[in-house]
Image (cartoon, rainbow, N blue to C red; front, top):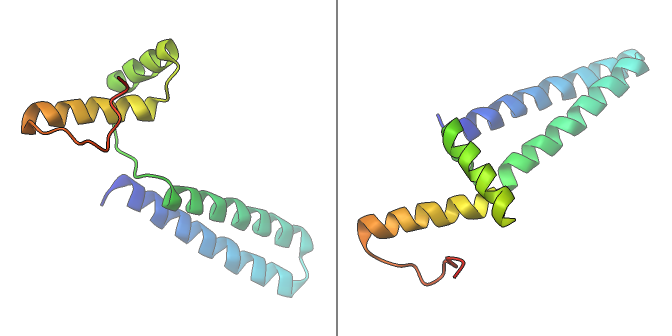
Length: 106
């Protein structure tokens, strides 16, 4: 299972538990717990939507991420753009093709 799928599954379970807790506490009249479960549900749904809508996450070794972050700080680019260019350049070196839709920053 990919890490993003595991995170989505965990967030889905958290949202279900929070929804059940909110329904139970609301029907039982425990309004303080209802507010707590409601807030947990809202935050979990926001995180779930954020992991679903964004581009897929690719795990990178810590040393490579540190290099990307340092390079991004120097150039003022986002780390995602640097990673895209690095992977595209690597692919171009292996396959020998150049994707005209990808901006290489030159």
